[in-house]
Amino acid sequence: MKPVPPLLLSITFFILTSSCNSENTELQSSQFELPDSGIEITDAWARPGRINGVSAIYMNVLNGSAEPDTLISLSSSIAGLVELHETYELADDMMGMREAENPVFPGRGVVSMQPGGFHIMLMQLNQPLNVGDEVHLVLKFALAGDISVPVPVQSQSEQN
Ligand SMILES: [Cu+2]
Image (cartoon, rainbow, N blue to C red; front, side, top):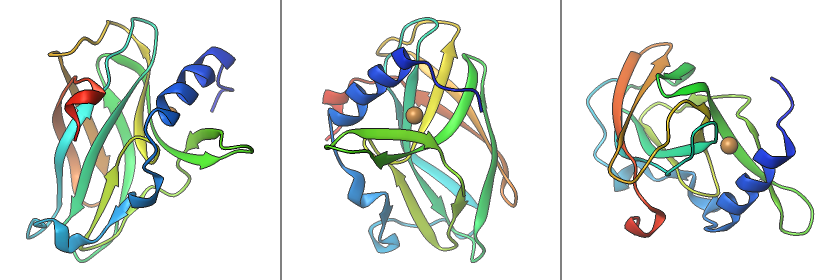
């Protein structure tokens, strides 16, 4: 992975610290209705972004299979680079982010991507993302295969 330019980091610090929710990246599966098998995505949304800039996608990933599944790759036609990121605490309440080292989704479990936790990072946007637009994202899992998700662009204030 190439070094992240400082501008990107400063934007992201703003994004990540604007809502801190880092505790519930992995939720009790009893709060969700798991599919009988395979992976289901719910409540996906993307932040607005500028051309050549960055955005982030949040969602719940429900794994209905008894087996853990691994995310192999991510792609979207609107971004040059798409990565699964995790956030971590730097010094003095600053949050950093990095590519998730071990993108495993537990069997019969839910991983909730939310601001301040896991997120799907869109970089090198080739078009602006405005509220009301839709992003098409493809997640490739080792077991579940390709999952194509339409992701609405929303403002943070729509999320409650
Ligand atoms: Cu990120």
